[in-house]
Length: 345
Ligand code: NAD
Ligand code: DAU
Image (cartoon, rainbow, N blue to C red; front, side, top):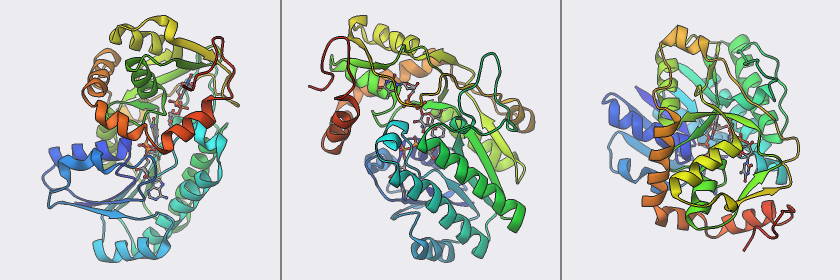
């Protein structure tokens, strides 16, 4: 099976590429990635020489390139990961979010419509449902109430993709996963940021009261769910993929500090994220019933493996935290008032 993966040099995309080539002899992968700040070919060193793998640096908004790839490669499936994926960046600079997440998805769907494809898998997020009041869990039919430019762009892209199924019978499936964590995650997201700051004895910025709840999903569990949907999912359907592990942010950070042997005094309350969703909660009953998938990695062992990876890969962390990252960090954190003073040093 030949798969066109977009955004395969990012966190989840690269995990999907590594896992698929390691576990499935029959798979060939073409990876189209623009290599933005979040794309990193170091994440793919282990597969770079594999004859079943081809990398193309390019933009999913480049219609000519995307068209040529469909003609040259004739992919049987598209797994569309490429996105601007960080909520805080989408608040600071929304323009690239709408360009990549909406125009990029449109460009790929158009190519799929013109050239045909066996499956177009739109990799989406639980954030499209917005904040969920306890004790409810969002099912796939739940209303869409995105709060941030990021989640609004993903909701729009999901609807566009589903319209291509309804109107043109492009065989689309949309998956909506909860918060992923694991090795190779860019240290702008909560877990890798807190691990890497703790290892460097830097302050850990907690937005607002830190009691916001997220559902944590180990990245390899997410990739296995995508395979389950690819093989057994129904076209035109949406599948939620949750980790069955809901925790308040402060508790996640406390566990990281305990595991790294660092003091709780490193936690610093800072001004809240604008429009911050209080709680995400998903029902994954549909994907489990229809495909048999359920998460295998518990949070304790997943977090321990993740912390170990960041401890053992300090060079990777150092490299991705230099350059552009410093500007982003200053822009996002230097104007947040804290109890103890500046976060940026
Ligand atoms: P990431 O930011 O780590 O990686 C994004 C990748 O897309 C990078 O390699 C980047 O270079 C590439 N990219 C960005 N713009 C591009 C463009 N215009 N053309 C081609 N490539 C481009 O993201 P991630 O965390 O791996 O997320 C992957 C997907 O999964 C996204 O669609 C995201 O919305 C979704 N998702 C993420 C999570 C999560 O917790 N991280 C949860 C649910 C869904
Ligand atoms: O829910 C799925 C989504 O999870 C994905 O669609 C997104 O791509 C991914 O970025 C993630 O979004 P979140 O906004 O939930 O993740 P983030 O890691 O940015 O934040 C998790 C929680 O931690 C959130 O409540 C905000 C809080 N937080 C985050 C950062 C970066 C802090 O308190 N301090 C921080 O410095």
